[in-house]
Image 1 (cartoon, rainbow, N blue to C red):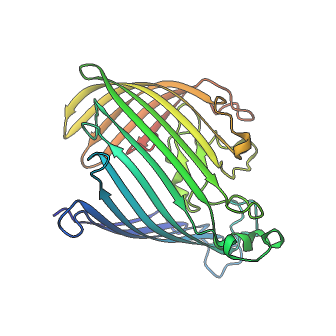
Image 2: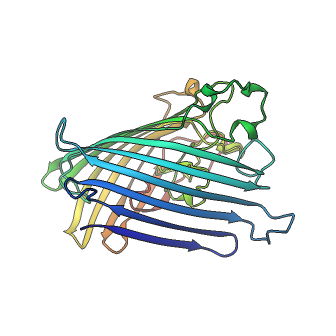
Image 3: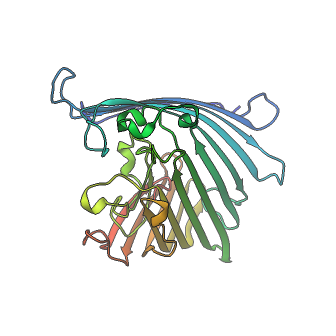
Length: 344
């Protein structure tokens, strides 16, 4: 009946360990394709020293998610609605190299609701020739500051972010058109915006955007950051202030991709296709700095291989057309390896 139970453990020694468990019921109630998913995850990153060592630093994350998905029949049968309830707890000890506030020790809570309305009309999941995939997402926390008489301007940053609050908007759209038989043109646009309820608190240092590279640098994604890949540039190098090592993440980004694809094999057990691409994108620290045409551009080519056992694997070579201030090597031609469309 399609039920799925997943268990996962990762470690590279005393400095890092993570484990997760998830369960999915795709036919909740047994009548309609309504899905229920439940998951828990735990991760620990540290310098590997014993817990009683005064020089030890660590960042621990625990999270729980309950999600409900439903296929809609209006406006048409291609629409889907997803609602997820998420809770994360972050515990830091002497971990000063990730945020610009506090002394690196503290606990922070993030309860948020994720709402995604999507429409998927593509004719095939791995190599679409026709159709589109469009989604609009809203991720929100309760506006705690609106229910309080506290003067947040007088609080320390540690106290301000004890219960994290934000609203986060994401729009993604991909369109596929067969130019000639199996030669396919793919157009994609992605936008993200992170906002605050109260100006005296400001925008949370959690949940920010990091742009550039293969999209795989989120292996240390302890703070809810969203890694956005972009070929032709080094990992996260298009993030505000990355050049001066004050890499606190962006609060708004946009990215555009045009890709011409041609299949080398359409075997379901080994789908292979080549592609050439043009890309443009950027991220900004604040909305007032946002420049819709101030984009970094890139061009290149690549190949994708889908194997049921490993998923979708990719290898791309990209060249960054524009220089990145303060980072003379960020846009040199380079190869990018990707897993399951991490670079998209």
